[in-house]
Length: 262
Image (cartoon, rainbow, N blue to C red; front, top):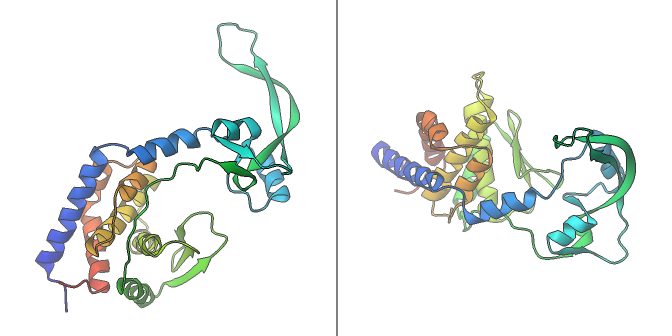
């Protein structure tokens, strides 16, 4: 049965209103702690990335011995460090300046999180629940749009959209899996079929807003997961409002496609 237009509009507008309110409330405690912890990890040069990949191809989160200790985790006995190159620095000649000069390099050891044990690192909030029959209906909708869907153990993100193909990380919970599929389908509908130039912030705000509306509409527990994700990409109320009609249209198309019950 076709979802009535007025009901769909009310459903979508109410959900987006809820999302805007959540964004306006600022960062959740989970997101604040996540940012604080992630600030302890450094970005590595291309050379060091190659060194890490060669020595520990499955590495996901790298830090030095003392950083792990600060995060209340310890390196497991017998673990072999991953050798990378670190600069030797000293304060510049100008005592007023905070600039530091590099005067050499040395080899240091870092460790992947899998080589450590201790306190769990904080995570962002996640969508929870059971998408029930809507999971298979979503797959049918993806297929009807002539989009290929596959799963991968090697994906570094939860999902990606590459124009006619959606790839999802294996092993996600049913609710997360559903949410990511909707997010990537939104990218396909809104961004892969148009040449309109949008910022990364705009694209992610649009896709995640659509995912929120659909997940919220089928009864999943959305908590702060979607607002947190949008704020990860510096999205805000203004960014969402700029795309309100685009988000509403894509959300309606997906809700109609999965035949949401009245």
